[in-house]
Image (cartoon, rainbow, N blue to C red; front, side, top):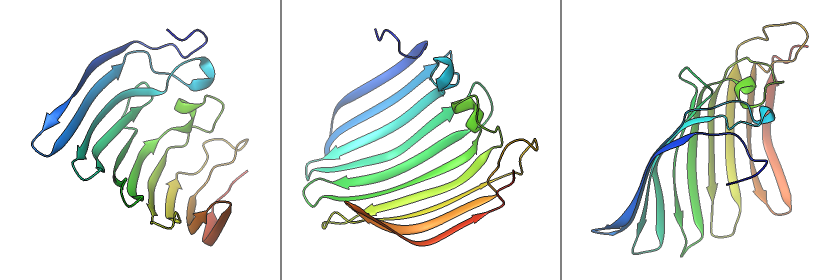
Length: 171
């Protein structure tokens, strides 16, 4: 299918069709061969999602869960809305015990958890807030992030960071 793409073994379901107020899409797909991207694999083990489009051009990601790595509870959970008529976006994601080495094998395997929120208004300005934390580095040869917090706005081409806190970088 994709020569040079990641090795996968995808199985699952995808359902789409009309409902009382628009269209709904639901999916539950498993990858039986998850692995780090730099090893020609796809880190995604499972994706479950439900998306709804109503008759007012509003999209809703009612829920999405992406399980990462070959085992464990590492996942990203997200939800959000997009109003196409008014060009307004709002989203929220939670990271739970994400092992960076499961995504790219040369990264420090210290699990990350936290949240990311973003809102885009009709003037195309995006407000964001990031809050990520990790455990200390397992080895003295690599850097690990204790916490990272940031808030700010972005409106192309400018990024404005109102608050930035990086704590616990260890090398």
